[in-house]
Amino acid sequence: MTRKPIFAANWKMNKGPLETEDFADNFLSKIQQQTFPADIVIAPPFVSLAKAAEKFGNVSAVALAAQNCSEHNSGAYTGEVSAMMLKEFYLHYVILGHSERRAIYGETDEVINAKMLKARESNLRPIFCIGETLEEREGGKLEEVLRRQVTVGMKDLTERDLLDTVIAYEPVWAIGTGVTASAKQAQEAHAFVRSLVAEQFGADSAAKIRIQYGGSVKPANAEELMACPDIDGALIGGAALEPQSFLDIIVNGTK
Ligand code: PGA
Image (cartoon, rainbow, N blue to C red; front, side):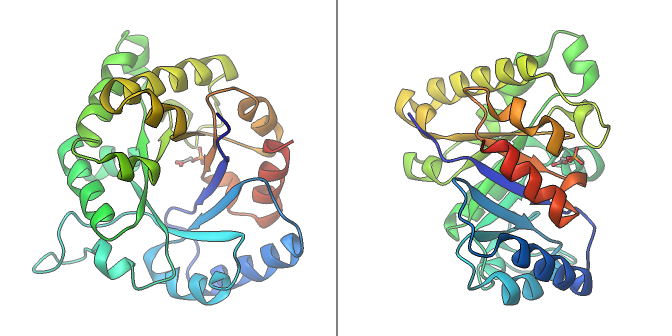
């Protein structure tokens, strides 16, 4: 089974419209006329999506993502943005369940599942993030945590939804810390996550679904991580804020 790798830049709370324009001009000048054997996704903050859509809307090599969406369609939810609204931008993906949303904003597996279903209603493709904390890993709870996150977070998705869903395995202890999971640790976790998808949705869906690795991915470690059989791309934070570094990760990761 060959799965097309997917490299997604999660800008988090960085880059307003002006910096988005700078990044886009620079990145587009670098990728001109090149084709990549991978999907490339950029996830700016909400306020920069319009600028990103203006810049990347005609560029087939780059797709856009939001970093979150509401579990509701509309109404009295101050500060929230719904999947239906996001669909009005040139937007294909939405990151859901990021560990920062879970830890800082208290998003539970149930809330994340409700968001996943809303995203699918609007035909957005979820980049569904899961991963354990260091305490959970050291306490022997890795499999239990991943099982709960996958079982609850992906509940009620259809086989069709599965084809449009990307899972991002991001060990929390590796995010923004400079500490990357070793290729062996990452591969083991990815193989386990794929087995969970097989249990819940069948072997065919499990063989097709793309599972990205995230957590301190850099140009220097991309090749080794992406060489693992169950790793199908990366979700990148810090190292994707700079166009050349993001591009180097894609190039090295698709060697
Ligand atoms: P990082 O972030 O690459 O800066 O570790 C990854 C993420 O949070 O998705």
